Image 1 (cartoon, rainbow, N blue to C red):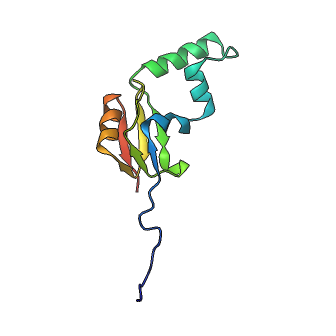
Image 2 (image 1 turned 180 degrees about the vertical axis):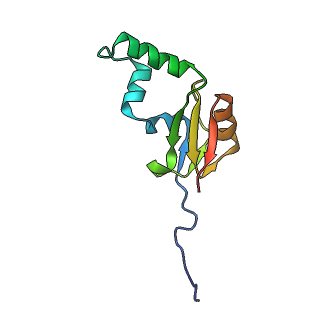
Length: 108
């Protein structure tokens, strides 16, 4: 049987869950959120904490740059707003991101 323009990876869609989403952010951001380093000055620490607490600024995580296309809703998110860019979102993931004050952006 002939099959013209055969694509073997037609349904290839790597996924990532919400509980692993913050692992895609840089090491400095993750380590500062868990344990602030002492080589920062007090003013820099205060500015970063205020930015993290404010709802005006949000971290942007582009999962397509890390090789993932779909975000699933397993796990919990912190109450810090985040903007997630992906090709596909599950309904549960979209609702959890919006509950945390974030946004879902579709990328082509």
